[in-house]
Image: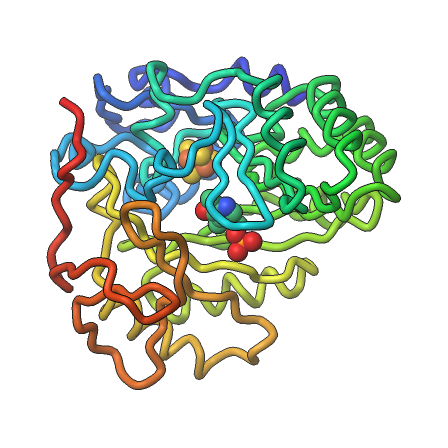
Length: 351
Ligand SMILES: *Cc1c(COP(=O)(O)O)cnc(C)c1O
Ligand code: SF4
């Protein structure tokens, strides 16, 4: 089956998925459902209380109203409808809002709804990039950039290749683990053809070893066009991987797969995903114990995005697990004070 067929035959209705799984799945009005058949098979094998069901099946808790609509403040740094430039020398490009799956904890879950802020503005985006010679790296994110066809991806890369100061291309994707059939020979050829022009980096998003089918493991081992470097990003999630043993297993697995662990994100306070959230002190305890179990080269950076668009900052406080409630910027200036154990409220919330 081609990856396109796999995607078009994915479950999009709770009643059909429920019938396949053999247990009830709620139909939510606010957040859509998308689960490929391959993923549904893994979910079924693990059962209704497994970490896959929790990550990917709709849940009534998503209707809770606390949490932020744009938790990391992307929109404060949007330069065009599809370009976010927060850090001096690198920018996020959002060429699509489609994903291979709808993760229930997604930090963009409110923005990715059909009336969300991201639109196709390729010309304006390219103009902005051309006018900003400090930008060395374009990071394809989304949605999921590997959902684009080879033609569309190739066209983006060709256009970016005409901008001399862009030297690195990075993809943030969940496709390698969720839809590994997408890693085709043709895609490999497209990337290979830019090998001398760009450094190519693939950051696969995965939170638990049980997400990985044999096909996904094989695909990632095999897919290394043009010296493509594989790295990982994971989100610390309550009830999924918020214990040191589960995370140690995950990072050992990445090491075996020759995927360098890059980021472990402290969860964002996103509306509709607060049931996955844990406070910083709890995260630091997990991290501290993890740190004792793994060699340094297997460890990712543990980071937190400060609400309001202030960017990523290291989340681990080596002196202790307690958290004063003050979030500082790099110069040591106080940006925000938040209650360490309670979610912040969204003063910018739209109705
Ligand atoms: C995370 C992020 C990046 C990438 O940062 P790195 O530290 O290079 O991984 C770039 N732009 C935005 C807006 C981000 O949130
Ligand atoms: S793949 Fe990424 S962007 Fe898409 S739903 Fe999952 S977390 Fe969100």
